Length: 239
Image (cartoon, rainbow, N blue to C red; front, side):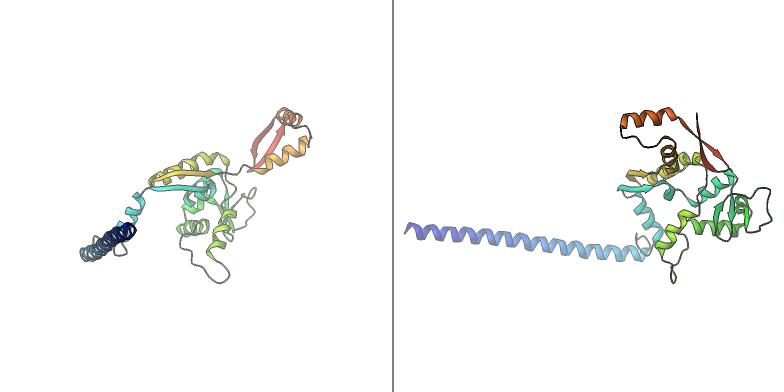
């Protein structure tokens, strides 16, 4: 008899809790539905008066997203983070020229050889058309994919166009990238910068390989390679 009564009590207890949980779930679903309805009404109301932060008002949406806290920007290449305008300014300061066919920086011919396709980079400040063409060539601005050339193709092609500027500009680009990320309310920036491999290649050729790492280190240190610039190229002098 006790066993039957105990089973009946447990059945009532179980039924009570199942009902309670079911009622709570029903109320939760009801509250979610009410929130969705309220949100739809709010969006419709804000769309009507022009204050909605959405497709109806892209400027407000951009400002809203810009101020929103963001996590980490990982694997951020310095050369890919500087603005195209900054590359043009650096090229002008370094006395580089522009190949107007390739829309890429190049060394200026000695004494000028009459090649009209090679013009001083400073001409970009005299010609709005050339300036716009360089900006588009160095970035994704105004790019529209077409047959055989995707956005990925164009993106990676840009890196071969704005090279040749002096490494002394890197601190400027670092500060530029830092300020841009701070302006977007990013919390962390993982910056990537690949050193000039020609330094290691030159050192390897001069010193050679040694199985003893301590001896190899001492040989590299004693070599005292000094980097300098001649005609825009990195060369080394062993003291």
